[in-house]
Image (cartoon, rainbow, N blue to C red; front, side, top):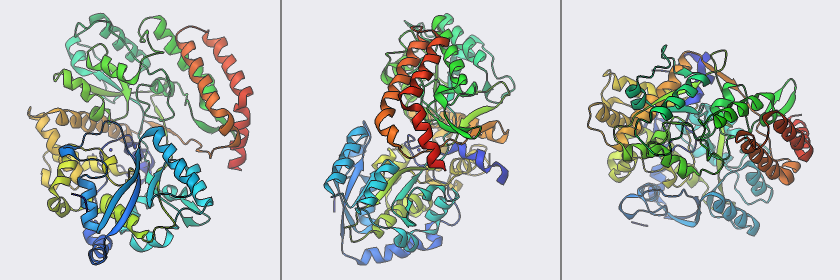
Length: 566
């Protein structure tokens, strides 16, 4: 053994889902209940058996992230979470391979091709899961899930009404443990509120959290003209070169502008009984027209086609730009770079509304990532026990944190969730709103920090209270902004019924996607940049793009998706 306000009634349940974290969120936001591991009996009963068995060796294929900070020299293979799992479950974990991004996908492909996979690993796509299943490389988990999964773990999956388990059920058999993927909400407009106060700028006077595209344009112009931090080469608004994102939150993308105009870029969806692609609609043309106008007027970054992610982060941190776009939790891992250079910086969170005052957004697929178990592994129940430990017991048992203080420190300091054995999130459909209600009661003085249910929210409450009292650090600043600004905004939008939801199509990879989609995506991104920077005319250039997209495989892909739906 080695040494990521309460919810409304049932009618609001769908809208409430906006607050669930995407996998991009580094800290776990599981909802607590009074039926935790200690009461439903499943986890503790398994623990007794685990303590009596011989140590089980477990090999993992581990998906990592870049630049994760581990304390005390810990690593992905040997850290507080892993050590707790090894001791608690009487297992010995070894990483057969570690990689991130495309490198990880290649490792999975190599293992699949060789027909020899680790005992457990994460796969990122339904296509990979089906290939593993068809090649008889993975275990049927139906029986062990029913026998070993805690009631609480089952309730998390059940909260999605079957959608979370649907993609892992092949021929009636449960062939993987899915990560859940709640709705992350819109791409929030984060605006430097200390600058707005300094310049006496007023927007959102009704305080509903919604502003217009015209409001955003005014703020960007004023920030550039007044230059509150006397920075060189100021930028009003900066977008990443890819401009749009398939993710609704779309950090550094123009998704907010597109959604406010009724466009859903990089989205397959149904309309008028047929299948369409959101990037080739008239609404998308109008969104590009807005961005092109900003570029021409000097509001949009003149280097929009070449800025890297790090470049835009630097613009924000250096006080060259005071507006950016992203999900509710970017203060935890992106905007904290601004605080690092200027501890007086603050942000306010807004959303862009459409002409009817609605905030347009789209649902995510309920499943994100799949944990598979090798068919050769003799103890598939261990995968369920790991799930129980991290997504039930760690969430609901204070005694566990007392027993493992180094794990409590990980939770308190927000060590990235990818350091757990399984790099997935498993949350209830309404977890973040439920947890936020608990957090808000604490911040309002209705309950004490110790009475907050989950360890994550107790840590958040402690940090936010420290910030409000003037004693906070970078973590306190981040949690205040992500929770008391980002989550609070989404709570307000939910309570006021401001969301207008689109349910996209989540197709399997079609034959023409395999051969043509990469070129179509390249065509889209290159054309959109040329339109925005004025290299080609908006009207004629967009119409030409749509024609080429259709002729180069787009029409056939739409046909194949329609056939899947039938």
